[in-house]
Length: 313
Image (tube, rainbow, N blue to C red; front, side):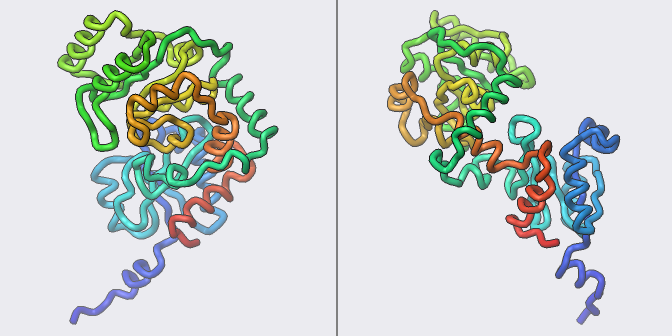
């Protein structure tokens, strides 16, 4: 029988007090210069527990190697595939973040939690959302008689977390909304020639459908409601008091009209008059359940988050 290495045994029983943060080049440079507040709060939080924080360049190879290194790994947006790894990601809007055990947002703790509007302090929620509107959606919300559809990627594909492909979603929106439909392409997506041809053919065949390059905030302020697979624009719509019809799984589903649960016809039938408690929801989703990197309690929230996933310091 091979002799057991005491050092390896110790590390296996109690991981070394090291945390490696895996960032892309841009974020790595900002964090290394001390110009990324969330990373600064991570350093302070783990440093208070005697944990050394190391910045690492993110790559497939680096993440794969992390499974054999002592200590813990925190991946930015990537899947935490081994027992001492978690993922961290912006909760859509700065300064809110989450630390989770899955890279799929619909598997996150907040997605599986029940939203109870009566448990939220109404005055605090209203003040919180007023501030969010001033920062993120300056302007007055109106209803101009159109449905806004922020498109994401893979327009012709039906992926596992979706009820149908994005182009089929557009077709159902035209069939059930009875309104003009304004679609916007994602500015960071690269679309194939075949995708764009299929999209433009749909536009040409439907006079009520148009493509717009206007900013998402402008289209949110003027729309009647938002239809999307799971774009964060729907969450922005909540800030403007706009309902969302979702064709995909996501973590901010609680007050949306989910096609997967309701069916297409019922979701669109409810959409024009759907008025959930947007303020209470946004306060719960962002302020009450996320890590606020700009708040005094950020370090406590960070340590609470990793402890919920079994990290012990």
